[in-house]
Length: 92
Image (tube, rainbow, N blue to C red; front, side, top):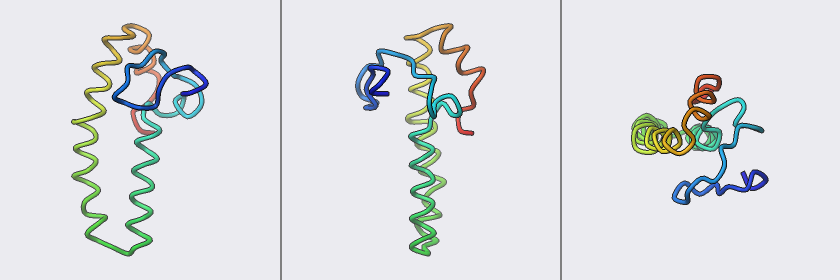
């Protein structure tokens, strides 16, 4: 994202739509990496409580963050984002 000249911080306005690197495989590679990290930590800690918390966290991330970002990106980049969204999966 730095190479494309845009911020990875979701609270900062996007200046460029990044579609290369890990973004060519997933529209949300940073959130996907966080999910795998959280899953790995739950398994490493051998904790069902942590693992059980993953589902509600994913729901909050999906509806509270990702859907809002997608709406924002569609408004900002229009057809370019819609074409990207139709060719690259949200997760994997």
